[in-house]
Amino acid sequence: DIVMTQSPDSLAVSLGERATISCKSSRTVLYSSNNRNYLAWYQQKPGQPPKLLIYWASTRESGVPDRFTASGSGTDFTLTITSLQAEDVAVYYCQQYYTTPYTFGQGTRVEIK
Amino acid sequence: QVLLVESGGGLVKPGGSLRLSCAASGFRFSDQYMSWIRQAPGKGLEWLAYISHTATTIYYADSVKGRFTISRDNAKNSLFLQMNSLRVEDTALYYCAQGSPFEHWGQGALVTVSS
Image (cartoon, rainbow over all chains, first blue to last red; front, top):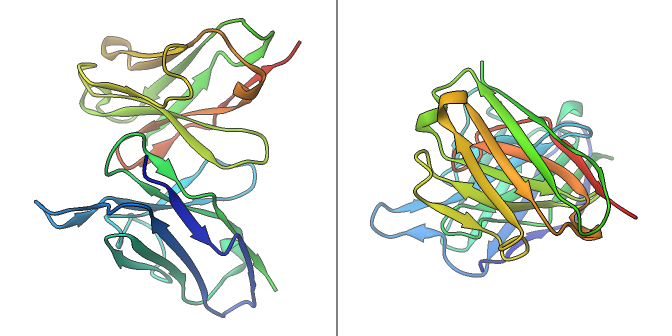
């Protein structure tokens, strides 16, 4: 199984400041035949189901604010919230859909400092 | 808009069975891959099972293989999860989700396994 490891487990950031979350996979999730990274990011607010933010490692889902940016390839990925807003308080998960079993990172809780 | 509504959750004793349903609307259900994902109280997300649009390809997590069965009825725009031999550790909120990656999620059905 591909193990997804996020860091940190939690972080507190001031409003308007940058929040950065790392996600590392135990094996590559880059499919060489199409040069796509099978890596997604989700946001889960309290009492809600997860919401897809990013797919193919860096493509924002429709309607996701452009303060959410993501990058990386192979085994190392990053999600950045460039200017944290109050509504961004949530738990963020990375997930690989390269192969089954599909696996998620353990989650990173983002709070306001 | 896309709507996924799970039902069938509840309280069951260890060793018991439950069948979850997911009613889909707002998209062409018969064209979409579907999955079940769960979240234990206060914990992270665990993918459980995947079914292709024609049900010809099915995958399971090892934690539920042999106990859970995913199925679908494209004529009724419905996804199912038959859960047998339930354990205390199966207690969780169970989500159905559309696509790969998981583009849309339902609100979840709570399954509690307790004596």
